[in-house]
Length: 118
Image (tube, rainbow, N blue to C red):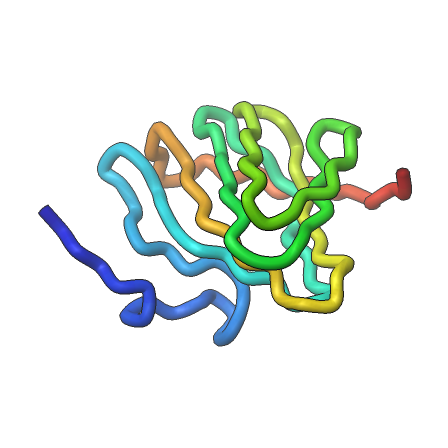
């Protein structure tokens, strides 16, 4: 058994971005924060599915040419090979728990993506 407190881990960009609480052996689990106006590079995973559970704020997520506006309490599931892009167009921080499974060391493929408006 392992117990990890979120406060013991660092966000990738200091006070925002992803924060991994666990990487492998069967899944990745973490917290992601995007400040107003921040986005997360469009990407997909060949093998891993990615799930988000929104804890705070709102997010616009583009998944395979569809746009979804999600809020606190929403669960988002992204299948492997589906390009996804997140942007915080709100006025408060977005915070979500995320999980990727099955664990793969190198499974993220970044893509050129020009967000479109709905």
